[in-house]
Length: 206
Image 1 (cartoon, rainbow, N blue to C red):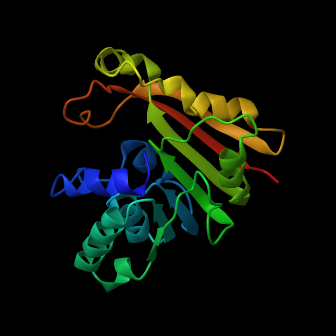
Image 2 (image 1 turned 90 degrees about the horizontal axis):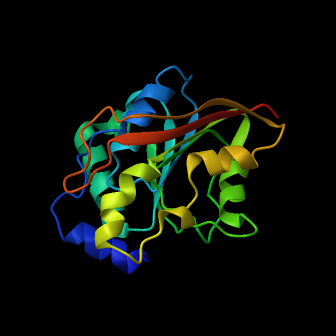
């Protein structure tokens, strides 16, 4: 799933996603004091714009330049105050450390991060969280992938980090605040059976 793959996927539709912020982010970040945020795999920018509208300074990163251009256009339409709070950055965070850290919030919503023995990409994201900052990961519940696996036998969701996997890798420098499975707050994407979210929210204590 390289940049070309994602560019082609975004070009296949006028809008790939709803443009609304993810429910996990809205639920878990509403009580956080605005600061600097990293939006990992920002897509067309729904989460980044929601954060910017609440006063956050956001670095929104995606591998797809097409997605970033759509996000920037949506930000411009939202007004100068919102647009001025978001920096749109093209990068592959699987191979490249996050730019511009540390961050008060690192938000990773439905981002397919492959599991590796040395956890290099994951540790880069963890290192991007400032002391006192929040790591927020939302993903689809593995139980909801059953129907998709039937039609895509080569897809194995266990080869990607799940929030609970990340929680087990956190050391004493972190305080886990949420580690659970819950019903989605919005309807699942069209053509999918994703009715539950798995959520990790952790605060870096040092």
